[in-house]
Amino acid sequence: PMILRSSIRKNTQLIRVLGDIGNPVAIPILEKLSKTSFTFFPGALADMKLAIYGNLENYPEEAVSALLEIGIHMKNSAIKEICQKYFHNRKNRNHHDFHGNE
Image 1 (tube, one colour):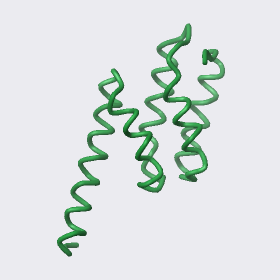
Image 2 (spheres, rainbow, N blue to C red):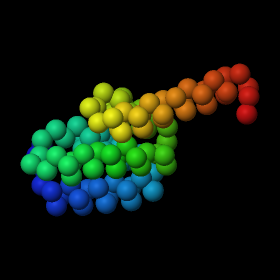
Image 3 (tube, one colour):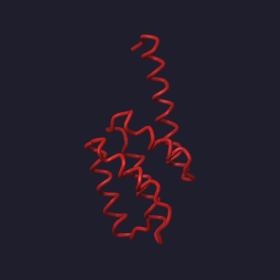
Image 4 (cartoon, rainbow, N blue to C red):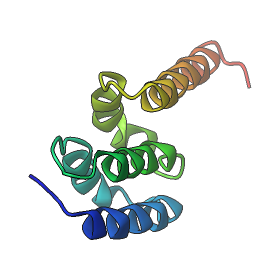
């Protein structure tokens, strides 16, 4: 769906607040927003999507998996990098857990 610049800016502010809270109830909405593909304001849309992926650290790991899968396939290199780091860190944590380290 197309959204307006003012809506994108409000969403970006809300995304940051939701990220601070980390309630997984917000994830389906974030997934929908991250799939938004058309607006007359592509810069504002890119900023909003970057805010989504840059504010995932407080959400439960299992809740953001689908969102990260979406992000890893995006054209935005900053979002891809965030997703790759998240997957890399998760892999390292799981490796330590599996082997009884840390």
